[in-house]
Image 1 (tube, rainbow, N blue to C red):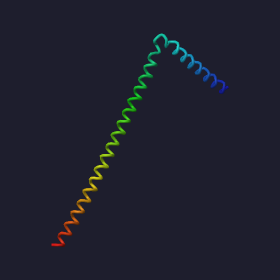
Image 2: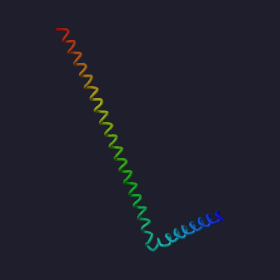
Image 3: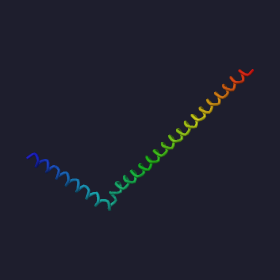
Image 4: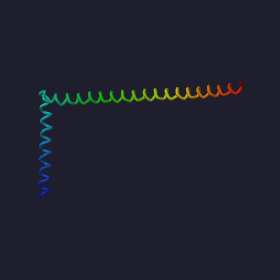
Length: 96
C-alpha cells in the first residue's frame, strides 16, 4: 500500500511538472515567456562577468608573483654585492 501511494505521488508530481512546462511553452508566444529568456540572458551576462573577474584576479596574482620574483632577485644581487664589498674591504685591510 505504501509503495502504491509513493508511486501515485511521483506520477502526480510528474504530471504537474509536465503540465507546467507545457503551459510555459504555450504562453511564450504571447510574451509571458520573455521573463525566462531574460533570465537566461542575465545568467549568461553573469557568467561572463564572473569569468572576467576570475581572469582579472588571475592576472593580478600573476603580476604580484612577478613583482615578488623581481624583488627577490634584486635582494639576492644586493646581498652578493654586499658580500663582494666586504670581501674587498677585508682584502684591502689586510694589504695595508
